Image (cartoon, rainbow, N blue to C red):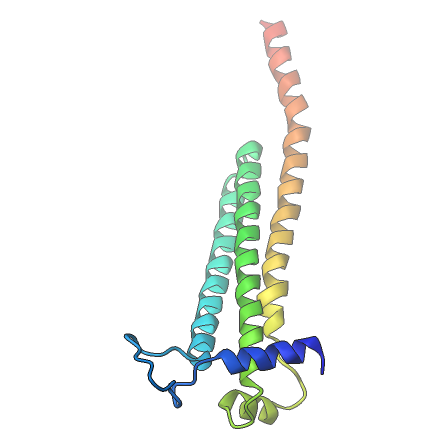
Length: 171
């Protein structure tokens, strides 16, 4: 058996099952199971992804509105790139947790996740596209826009210096 399969079996054995409480153990709060954790992580992942897309749109809108001020435009894009990269890391971590939770749940042949996955067929899940690819594509787009804005502002800087010099010499 592979190390990953062993890890998944060990994780499944450690998970508390709400239908089979441990004898002699009194819990002061409701028990949390893997299905509830999966629902929580899926919701968290969706919220983070939605926030990233809104934030991406706001950064692009801010950069377009600042096109007459290249340094401001670059600053908006550079800060947006850094923040988007941090969000992409958080989204990737949540996606990894969701993948692990689904792996544990799929070990139970009677769990709805396993049944629906079998009914969906061999096309496979596209959740990795959402959890890994799209966030980093947003970061890549902002990085390219930042570099383009920087190049534009550096091209305009010498012309601004020449313009100021010609005004001083002309008076």
